[in-house]
Length: 263
Image 1 (cartoon, helix red, strand yellow):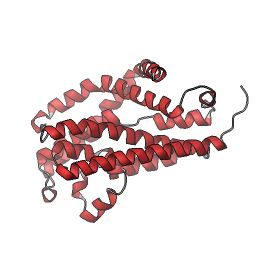
Image 2 (image 1 turned 135 degrees about the vertical axis):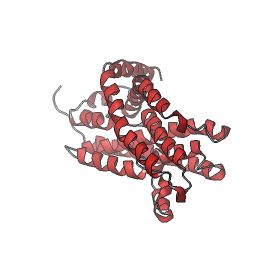
Image 3 (image 1 turned 90 degrees about the horizontal axis):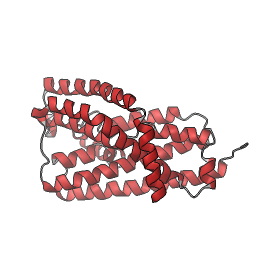
Image 4 (image 1 turned 120 degrees about the horizontal axis):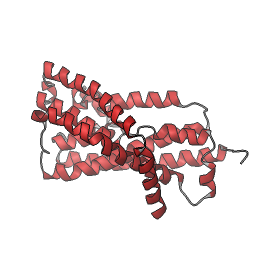
């Protein structure tokens, strides 16, 4: 554990060296967010799905918060580069687990990103403070952070497994972009999944994507309560375990194919 805490410390120092990039990325991310909020201010909420205008606008504010806390930014690209350039050879010779090493760097990156993006995000939310809603109840307040941690782990393990394709393919950017596009739609990043038809929503909930964005927000807003919330939390946990097992599987298969030359 001590060595991974050291990795987190190094990761924090490295990420904070690029704090201006984090700041500009955050500021530019507000542009599409502001556009979506303005759109729903004009057309009102999705009344047929039980979403009021205030809830819909606050939904997008929560999307920004969840994104800052849990999103995988460049970890998959960096992992693929490590494989392609042979940097993982050192991890095969040292008592360091590469998955836990990358997970430590992921959390370091999230901490650094929150430190830089927290103030502009708080200012943005303050500008729309009339739409900010408290958690629906105490249970939602306590369960929401748990769902966020599971969301972060799920996103990381899926990205890690995708990056393992670099063992077989020289360039995996196309697959990363396809996954990102599908996640953006199926996770509820673009709109709440409640506005979809019930059959389509049920199909999406058979995948891990709704648990990467929509589900934790639905807990906070009270869209998932009682047995539905606890069942969803259990399913989210199972998806995290499944993604972790799949990531390990991809690593083991990839290492069998991996070869490095020179010193």
